[in-house]
Length: 267
Image (cartoon, rainbow, N blue to C red; front, side):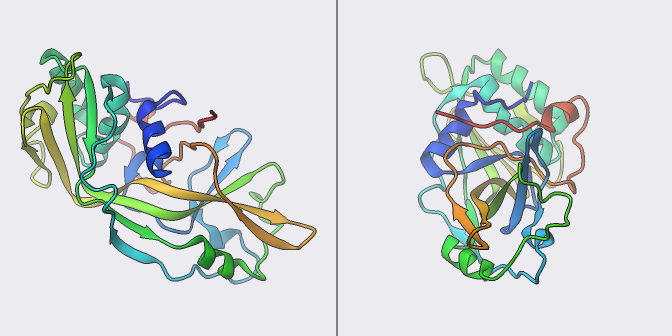
């Protein structure tokens, strides 16, 4: 099962440590300036914030492909196998190995793996500063006739996208000792475009060959009717954001598990 819930320790780790919101499904098309609309029934798939504006709105210049020294090659907290597959399962599916997720989990369990942690090798960031976004919003207005502009909705705007072509998995047993397993555990040879390599004992790296967005940085966009202007606020809790509508559905039986509903963290 690869369902992420509001009791997901891995998602909580990335939010508390790096203030990142993990995408439910890693994908190529995530972009700075995407807007996730939070309705009373859940979070909608994103689209450019400009599509909600009445007057012409242009995103400020975006810094692209920035190395993240504080994130690349850092090991996450170890989480139990189920929680670890909340990230590993969707990553494998996004790289074309969705059919291997169940076998990969069973193989790791059979070798004694009980916990997983992760490294994001060569993680890169596209971003825009909140200050620049605020300047771009001066004098702009929502299109009040747009059906998604409603008083009860919230608007979360992407100011940063974290991408990585690879994910390193570290497996340990109940006592914290690394568990050795080979690349075949997650489908080595399943695709010519995917490289799966074994590192030190208990570590494998899955490289899909193309950078996938796995997390975003968000701010909340509000509108002050008295001042007739936008406001930007930090987000106090984790939001489980979804992928976009352009993503192909992964192979059954994972399709229904990976298209997730919105949840959040509230301390």
